[in-house]
Image 1: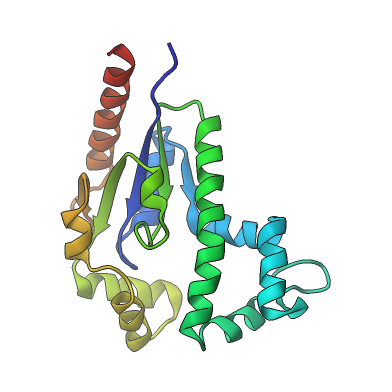
Image 2: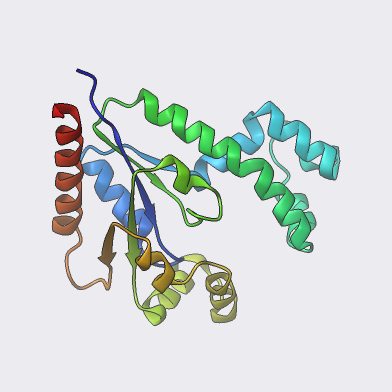
Length: 205
């Protein structure tokens, strides 16, 4: 009997610790699809995205070697909210489809996708369960400043453009409070074990 693959979204605001949880999931044998990494890959490798970006903003979108001209793209996107919407509506569906194709090839009964924009991107339609990683605002701000080099105002602006933690928690199946004190691994293990049990139950019924 074919296994039932449970697809889990790992989400949360900037500085919450999503990537830490994703790495723990990997250690526990759960394959994780990183939306940021794969979106960057697809913006170079996917012929449809490449042709549409060139149509929108010109051939300057790409360097002579075919790599994305990030500085030029940023100059066009972040100065115009409409351009942000146009690029998102182009890239997000391709990333979602790529995740679905990737998930179908995995042997694990549980797979995960790490994304900061689960609802805004439409990725919510491709998953079965949602895990929200969160921390108090001050902790998240300090973490982000330390790792990214952004200043406080830049971090707060990024946070203010994301869904609030309260809203994310309301729509989650699981949540992990990541304050840096209580060990995360036992709680991540518990989530994985429960998801595996759900998968097994789905197969046996």
